[in-house]
Image (cartoon, rainbow, N blue to C red; front, top):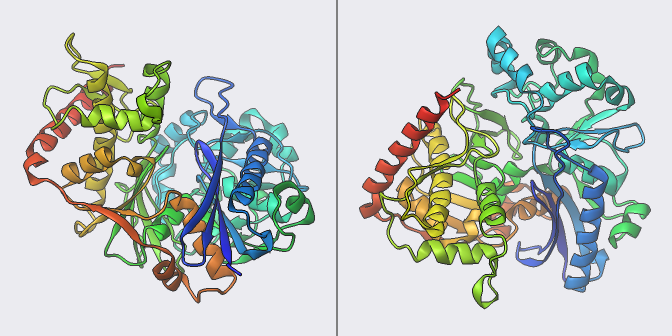
Length: 498
């Protein structure tokens, strides 16, 4: 009888369940779109219970599609977006809506921490910049504006921790996710009173659950969860991991030689090393899923979600030809324009946040009457590439350029977009096999947790492969460098406008 691993990915916009054979081959996928709630300007929330119901529905659909005996699933693990805040009570029920990782309500707190030196004092311990949707800032905001929620709360969780809780009934945190939250000492891998005291939340330490490793067994599927999902009660559930780690593993990142790029709601650009890098010019260092390794990340919410906005706002009502998806139609429109042009407008992909020292707004700049919707669409593609290039250049201050970059996320499905990344970066781009790489990374953790493979490197060798490679075109280097310079100059000019 065939055997399988289940990976669950609660991402920024979609909750997905994917089933994999023990060799990593994807068998079936099911998903549900997550609803983002915006009760006030700058706020971004989700119903945690609705996310669970969507996840359970996706698992039921997956099992029906795959037509397998649920008992053939050897193990399960979850991944998901990092940061934000999922507060639960002692019984595991949410005390309020989950706060999502693009939330901005705590911006004033972050500004104060930067101005009064708190952020600089915390950096040697947390190894990361502070930003509004991290739980340290959100806990401060709730303490000041919504103390009744904290009074009901028993634990701080993240997206995948809440799903694991619903599967197993057990409350715990997990190292990779927690190490990206500014709630712990990344160097020691432990909670640290000095960190909490710096942020003024030491009295909330009781909300921090025990930390487990991504490959630890953290319970089994309960009878109730089995009834809701169709899974077999008693199926082992691993700790799971931060989605950046999951995509790293699924990309085959097990040493310093390579880099990984994830293009989704957030644009994440990363590499791993045995020594943590702590620098004010680096966005974040966190603990990697492979014990003894650290993940260095440059990221921001400046990636493929900008295309989702464009499709919703600019292509609404347009039916793609030949039954194609809206996104495949976008690829066709951009590809039809041919070579990159200096005449294309500049798009700043800052609709959900900015990745420059002086924040600039999202914008199209350089429009004239002859520009078409097609050219605006190409500008969106290029703007996202330039946002990632900004992060890549920061990372290359600290290490040599890699021989290739492994690319995952929504944009990795677009051949025309991948071509732009390769030509702008002038580095070969490799696309790992499979459509749900985050879920594959989680499945790899499940495989290690149940002992099917002895460690992560062995599991990665067995369960990952490269589907295709895109070599850069040197003849396009000059025009992309010129356009990138215009992009930066445009952002700087707009940032100066109050």
